Image (tube, rainbow, N blue to C red):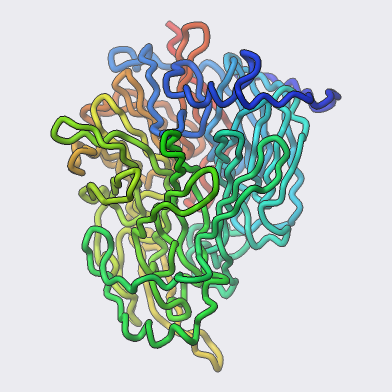
Length: 571
């Protein structure tokens, strides 16, 4: 059934003066409730369900034996047909979903009926990186959203009225934001995108994004804001002013040669000593948090200019890296640069997840990161020590090969591997479930027209061959337990449940449940639009729901729509 729209936008409600960071009333989502989110079976309070970002639901009403009876029980039409990537949040029977363009809707989570909507007015005509939005944060009686025009906005949870707004970046359209913010201990964390992007301000296809353009990059950062007021507390730049060149390493962390001419790079360092000013390093994914260590973990984007690596000699720290910061201060604790001096567009876009790495009868706190190069890396959570690099979960061809004048075919290409899609992890069996893309690309080296003749790299998708992979990776040793192939590249994200199921959507409009132990497809539902968003699960009055946004992905050519759909067992 389609949920009726009952907007309360005209309702005038005063902003509550109370700000209860310690939890407040039972209806308030405060620190105590967020810290206990992992043991909260019924709700989905954070982007990855808990601070560990495992996207694992302990609900098991829907399971292998009965998933074939799963049916839609409500659907919501947003009225905005565009790339739809949101992870909805659910608390106290209400669902909070961001919409393309930075809008937010509150819905009855049992019916899909709209309770209120915040309509965002962009302050720039053409945001740098499109209008897609990946979710909100919920805490202290407020809903927080980072918008495509680089604003961070706090809304009253009951009414959708604006409480405060802060500027993530100047309103010039050069930088934007698409990630779901993170709330932790009175702070809101959000980062900017567009720092390593040199495409057109309004791309209509994947080829538009990765093709050569002379539009410049910027300097990426993650910032922390006071949740009560929106005041900025600290800012960490992906590119440091001093030391950004790094150690000129010749291999990636797993030992794969990078083919760098380090002597030539060193010779250009003095000429390009200020490359850090526009060095890239966007923040695409929501951080994970270890409250005990007080550390937040996230990935950084590719360096800039991506098309002219000669203008940025060195390792280009801390781009294309997994980073751990002190949550209280933004101080760097450790980093792992997964692709030093990246010239393939292998930014670290998928959100990391936390797990206990179990080997030889002991458990070691660890953080896992899926990458565009096709590996899952597992690092020690406190020190950054590399513990495991998985088998590749997509085909690899000419990995880290230098572009040539004639052009060289490289797989994975700049789209991934694992793009922004979140990974799911089932702690009971130690398996990580990764949505992958096989989309080879040609990398060709040429020169800018005109007197400068500066070098450039042009990247072209080889669209005749493309598919997706859903892979179960054993986190103990990085081996692949099972893998299934999908018709088109997987872009969106994965959900694992205690019912022994893994849910994932496809750009063809298929939404499917797989056996978590074998990968066998047990159920599917077909939509007229691509299913390119991460699913969630929640329960109300004893009924388990599976919900997902169905709005496709414009850049990949997947049909766009405006649906948010919830499934349940009706019989």
